[in-house]
Image 1 (tube, rainbow, N blue to C red):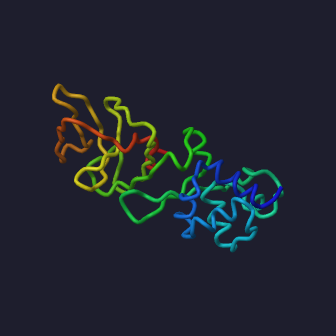
Image 2: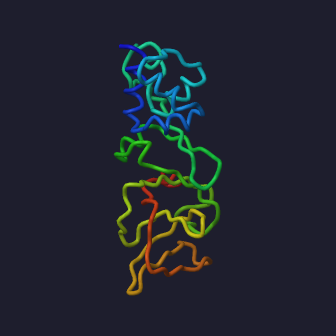
Image 3: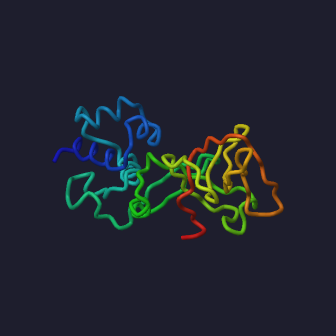
Length: 190
């Protein structure tokens, strides 16, 4: 199997568009198209490693087609957080268990104590962007005044209550909500 075929299979396995891969690797979309189509069959080793990590595939399989695509038990996926400059590494098996691909999730780092004790400061949360219908009492991410925040959401007669779990922080009542997605994973609970 040609490198282009393995490259494309890995990208599609992770649910990533060419533009997503270009952004994550810091290369042009043309470079991604060239690797995807077979116009170019070589990548620098650093990019190969980044791409294997990003897509959750075995680097040995990616380089030469030996073994199985997902034979690497140490495979991790790096996900940039939406509210800090950090990235979060998580085993690709966690995403498989959650039934999501990299393109369907965002990560969020809890920056204060507003969600303690359930979600303490520096917990990393995975947000499923596909789950935006509100379930009372669940955690959702929102963009409020240009800033991403996570709160438990409850329906009220006037709209919605965004509630931190720490009583030292105030509730916020709002008429409408437009969640970025539902929290489906917390590093502090796993």
